[in-house]
Image 1: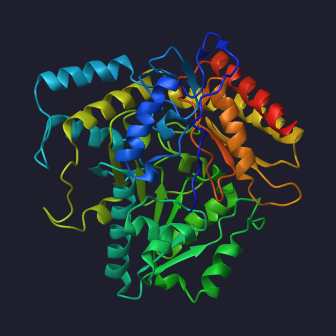
Image 2: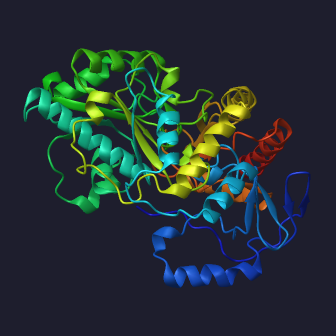
Image 3: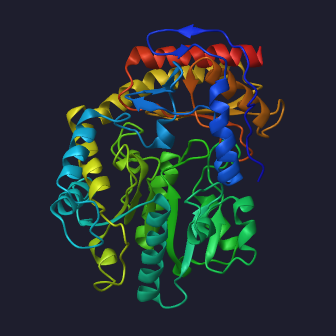
Amino acid sequence: MAGHKYDLEPRNVPKVDTDYRTIATKIPVPESLRVFEKLAKYEPMSMQGQPPVIWDRAEGFQVHDSWGNCWLDWSSCVLVANAGHAPKQIRDALKAAIDKPLLSTYVFAHEARAELCQMLADTAPEGMDKVFLLSTGAEATENALKLARTYGVKQGGDRKRVIVSFSGAFHGRTLGAQMMGGMAALKEWIVDLPGGFVNVPFPDGFRCEDVSFDLFLSSLAEQGVAPEDVAGVITESYQGIGPNFLPDEYARKLGAWCKKNDVVLIMDEVQAGFGRTGEYFTWQHYDLTPDLICCGKGISSSLPISAVIGRNDIMDMYPPGSMTSTHSASPLPVIAAIESLKLMESENLVAKAAELGKTLGDALDRIQAKYPNRIGAAMHRGLVGGLLMIVPGTKDPDADTAMAINEKCFEKGLLMFAPVGLGGGCIKIAPPLITPIDALEEGIAVLEEACAEVLG
């Protein structure tokens, strides 16, 4: 489980001064090292691993430090800032809420909580009117697990308890979320994995070339799992390690199989939701209807909040007081979420992501075609994309090359998070949905320049 490590030795890099990027110092900034030293002393090592910039402020689609540098942001705080960093509407609403004052409520009611629940329910299919507000994406997936297994056992007895998930899946870092996950290295700490959790291959079309739904059925059969054993299937609407997207036909058949066998279909939209791929939710690209939708990150474009949106009969299985969370619907994150969802609508951000996605997708395909022996795949939909770096002649991820390109971009004023994926070989791209077309094109030019310098 080795992580990425950026060089903390300040070095001279070419100065940058454009409309959207400024690099005016050595990188990393020499004066910033005292902060990294303090963090290394007082934080666990696991919190290290992102490009070495000390954020001072973030506005719109740019991140600034306090030494005059400005990065074009392609991280969105890991798919959080869909409506941009610190929009004025969100800041103004938070200021008013603080001055009210109302900062915490446990599960006592407040008006904004009812408003947000209705807004989220209105985004879901008919019959999915119930919304459980939480704090993190892992809380959402854990609760979806609990609901799916409860429903399965209620319908089919103790036998109907299996939760099916996919290889390469990531559903959070808590125990249940990692039991559902699809990366063996992340489960080593569990040691004794309980029964009732199975993985099937994810049909990404690259590592797993078989994209037929027959593979799902045969994999279950090989593991001794019959349809009547399955309580729930959970999948990210796109896998965050890529992004890897479900083939549309596979997804359609998965939805039909779940419905036929009374299996709870959970779509994990924690990264994928709120306009990111040019639909409100990424599952809307597929011809299926989920039973539970897990949301997080982009709900508020800022403060921590998550949700499970679900089928009424499933969500109402637990009586009052038996499925709650201390900070469920905490007032400030709720206010931020309401304003962010309003911005999604008023700024037409779903359509904007779809339109900008054409530019981003064409560029990633072009870059991949230029270096086919070094870039195994270009994956994209809307304003999320990735380039999978591979060891020449193989499908093995090339983490060193991905890291080198990421660092080059960072030095040139383009900020992404550390390379992701199985082995850390994927350069992942996720700009805020408010990014102007010319800023997106400038970022693409920087990426192409970095690829040329590293790949030749």
